[in-house]
Structure formats: structure tokens, C-alpha cells
Image (cartoon, rainbow, N blue to C red; front, side, top):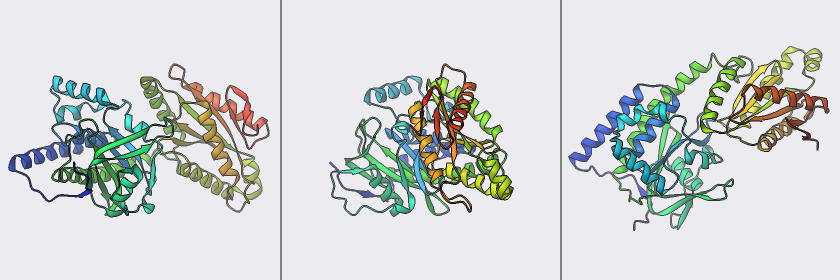
Length: 408
């Protein structure tokens, strides 16, 4: 059993392997050139890595530092939740004779499907400037942080056979295991922008050095496609962003909420929302002027962006009122805890020329299930916000639990 950490091989392989490799790269390139939508590009990358006509790995995960450029987080994944599901998927692909091009064309069908590894790794993050190479490779297992950190620090792809990498999922208390795995960097402007992590957990197929050439080629294609998608996204967001604060505007928020609720219905999951209002903001404007008020608004918006997850939507609803849509939170208590964390951070922050504690916020929290009307989400959060204001400001109130505020 191969238990040595391996760097990229220079093996050339035979002519048939090279022809298959070139055909695969051409198919992926054609598919990527047809779109500038980020999620579709990620789907193409992962499908190419896991399909039998592609690189034929059991699973693949993409980690990107997209909005938060210094922090890697899981963005999308492909792969079954267990061996039984893996076998069912492989048999289905054989029965339907799904080649790679057909699979790419099924993006719209697969776009809303839950991704097992994305869910399990949602709590993981890695700061790029803190990445370090592993000091010792003589270990029986590795943490996920060690595996990804090593790839970022060395800027080199590598693979490991016969040993495991794991991530402790604190929510389920079960470890996510990777075995016979490979890690490849994605570059943007010569800096690591993302990572591709693949493995063969279910069939334990041994990874060979010449396969790393294919993974590196996919990473290079991904780099070009993601750069195009990043530019497109920035241009698109210019019409969706509030000019003063840099967060999304109300128009985009309303469209996003509608689309997200349709998706939540399909996935049968709840949506949670926080509505924030800066306390006594009118007095700030009247006493210190609107320029001071604008600086407070901008600083508060940036605080929200820096202390929420990438998948959460932040928007300026109007005036000094902001909404945070928690797409990954399914419980009222979880959303309440997130709101209370943000309220506490605001209270401890020195805004503009004000001392900490001079600028505070009140917040209302609500949640709707997939069988409820999504328009109730904001209405309920707004009512809870009013209760927080009425109770004395600088606190959080959860709709439906009038006694639960941050002062209790």
C-alpha cells in the first residue's frame, strides 16, 4: 500500500491516454466557454473530475476565496453520501449512458440538489495567509486543515494513498473522512485562489502520478473560467449594490429572496432572517451631520459583511435598516444566536469618532418553513424588531418568543 506523500508526476502515459486526456480537456473547455455563471462553471469542473469519461474520482470539493479573498471556504462539491448511493449513481449513469457532454447539459436539473460534502464542510474555513506546509509527513492521518494548508503554502499539487484526512463536523459530531485523496491549487494572478480536493473513498482506487496532470489541467481551466466569472459577477453586481454601503440593494434582495424561497421549497428547508436597525440614528444625523451618518452606515455594512458567512445575503433595506438572509440556518435559536453575536460586536465597536457603545443596533429575527408564505419572513422579523425597540433598544427579539431577547 502506498503511504508516501507524492508530488506531481512527470509520466507521459501512452498515446491512448493522452488522446483521452486531450478529448476530456476539450469537452470541459467547450462547456466552460458557454457560460460565465459561477455555479455552472463549478458544476462543470466537478462533473469532469468525477465522471468516468473524465478523471473518474469518487468525490470532489471546491474551496474558493471568492468574496472574502483571504479565506477559503467550501463552495460546491460532487459525490454521494455513502457507498450505497455511490453504487446507485454509477449504475444510473451506465443505464442512461450519460457521457460527459450530456451530464454538463443537465446542470439546470441538478443545480438545486443538495450537496452532501458542501453541507458537512460548511463550518470549515482556512485563512490563506496563515497556511503552512506540514512539518512531518510521517503520520497515520491528517486533518483537513493540514491537507489544504500544505497545498496553499507549497503551491503544488500532491496526492496521498493509503492514509486518511478527516474533518470533525461539530454539528453531527461525526468526522468527514477522505481517503486516497489529491489536492490541487487554483491560481488567480499567480496567487492561490482556490483548491480542488478529490478522493476515492468508496472504491479505494489508488491514485497514480499521471492523474495529477489531468487535475492540474482542470485547475488551470478553472482559473481562466473563474476569472471571467469574477469579472462578469462584478459588472452584474454594480446594478445590484447600494452605492453608499456596498451591500446589496433592496431591489436585488427582493428578487433574491423570491428565488431562494423557491429553492427552499424544493429542498424542503426553512429560511431565517435578521432585520437590523441602528438605534437613534436620526439623532446621529441631526447632531453630527449626514456625512457622519453616512460613515456610520458604511462601517456597519462592512461589519455585517465581515462577520457573516459567504452564503448569507446582506442588503440595505432602506435608511438605517439592513436585512441579513441566513440561507444556511434552519432554526430560530440559531438565527437568534447569529443576530446576538452581531449586536454584541456592534456594541463593542468604535464607529467613526464615537466611543464603543455609543452606536448600537436592535434586531428582529424570524424564520419560515418551506410550506409557509415567504413574504411573512420580513413581516415577522420587522415585528420582532419593533418589540426589541420597545423593550429598550440594543437587543435582539425572536418572533413568536416575546420573552426571548438578548437582555434575558
